[in-house]
Image (tube, rainbow, N blue to C red; front, side):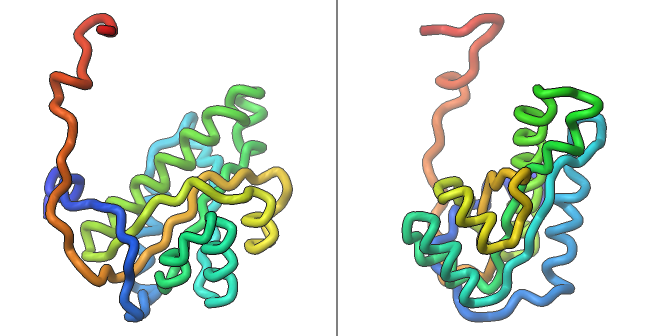
Length: 175
């Protein structure tokens, strides 16, 4: 599947079968996240791989009871590590670039998972401190995304998207 097909095929999976995701299958997904661009190539993000069923259930609960998170055999939790950016970029690097870079890494992981036949669903609604507690993450790390990864139970039809002319603005914004 080429990049453009992968982008079109990606959808938010909210039902996973119980087939395990091996380390061999997971590795290229993590490598894609590692290969994502970042400001100054500082990679101010960390990824916690969660396979433990009790921890996945706790992540589902803190994600406002989105129980499908616990169904996925692997959950990736993306954090900023703002200190990796602070020296070079100051407060903006710590507060803003780190978030951008962690989200880009997560998006690359999503596309890599899609390309190899796995499903994901970006979760952005959760209690930050509870996520840190579940993953034993340091207080300085900011969770930005929870990404369940697994084999989807179905393949939905492609979804409707806005027309490019509706979202694109030449030279200046239209109101």
